[in-house]
Amino acid sequence: MENTIYSMLPPLLAILMVVLTRRVLLSLGTGIFAAALLLAEFNIGKTVAILGDAVKAIFIADGELNTSSLYIILFLLLLGMITAFISISGGSRAFGDWAMKRVKTRTGAQLVGAILGMIIFIDDYFNALAVGQITRPITDRQRVSRAKLAYVIDSTSAPVCVISPISSWGAYIIALIGTILAAHGVKEYTAFSAFLQMAPMNFYAIAALAMVFIIALRNIEIGPMKMHEERAINEGIVVASDKPVPGELKDDLPTSNRGTVGDLLWPIAVLVIATVGAMLWTGYTAVEGKATIFKVFENTDVTKSLVIGGGLGLAVSLIMFARQSLVLKGVSRNAFGKGILEGIKAMLPAIYILLFAWVIVDLIGRLETGKYLAGLVESSNMSISFLPFLLFIVAGIMAFSTGTSWGSFGILLPIAGDIAAAADISILLPALAAVLAGAVFGDHCSPISDTTILSSTGAGAHHMDHVMTQLPYALISAAIAAVGFLMIGFTGSTLIALAAVVILLIAFAFIFGSKPQEQEVFKENLAE
Image (cartoon, rainbow, N blue to C red; front, side, top):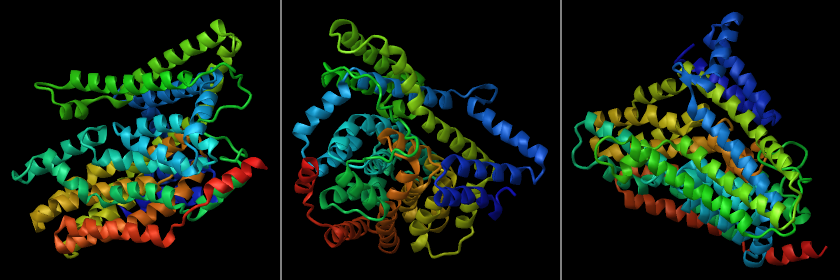
């Protein structure tokens, strides 16, 4: 069943079920069982063994602890506890009051999240969780739905990381490009300069980033997002309470009435600074020979750095809690145990989804779903002018089906390089850029993507609400990007293709946009 059309069944089954039932764990579980059944050729005994092996692989790889997965789980737990103690210390409430006086519109609240998402470009995991923690009090006060916040986070994190050379993504991609250029004897440009030239060709990343600002400034609500936003504005309900929300704390946590903005900012600032510092340190110590900033980011241990930053952030949040409970007497010191417990409990729904997603991604990898899709590209006899467009579509399908953009990079970038080198080397960079763009697009749409899951967690939104509300915007951005890849394939001009993308974005903004009367509506709702 490996590397055949049947390998598409498990991811498609999981995705179809999750859309129809909205029950993420049940749907992922069904896809997992279907994948194991295909791998075992319908032998129940082998199916159970394969399932056990896939679960084991989360925690143990090559006979050693799988520290990458364990570090991510640990970081989520640390983040949950940090959030709990920030709330107990009164930091969240104080920050919300402070922000309410300065960010006075719903548009402003969304722009804060978008700008922070572009500034924190070091890593998509870190971006998704950190921006959510900082922005959530502001968007909640301005009645911006959590689904909208999750969209803002998800649509700024990966698109920025994929075009920034100084990021974990950039370092990984530059390393891959280097091997492709060496394999085909390309010496006109280095891997780094190739990456920089490809950035303006990544039309999906550009369209997705622009779309976030257009949506906020022009008040464009499409599909399910409109319902979430109207409910938030009219009823003040930013997230439905009928099911568990990843990263959401219980309302009955004690809160100090003497909290300050510093009770929130200091733990988050230490979290950010310590994580970035740890990434630089782990990368520097892993470099052999002369260390450059790009080699440092290529070798950095992101998940270990997250744990270091999370541990120090938690230490500072505990210091702030001790100050509130022992010095200012704003909250009882007995709240310590509750903060630990509730912080852990808040992150469990996200961890459960993440564990299931990791298992299905592992099994899909064994079924060689990605290789099957890549083979379709290699065997295609399409005109070379269609190659960037075709690679964009295939990379999107691959990332959507497998839940991993990085896996799609690893499989499709070398294949794109082979095809371009054999047909017309001048199409090499557009072909590689199309793979990067398509993989981010597919990752945005996939309910089994870990970055999609973490964006939901960072925003405190229901996972499937985020998937379904982001989908229309991602599809529109992809359609605009597809035009760009067709243009660059037929004209060979980055400038003409980029101009076409910009024109389509402007047209979308003026055709679908409106000047919102949000301030008046919001004030009326507050007065009721």
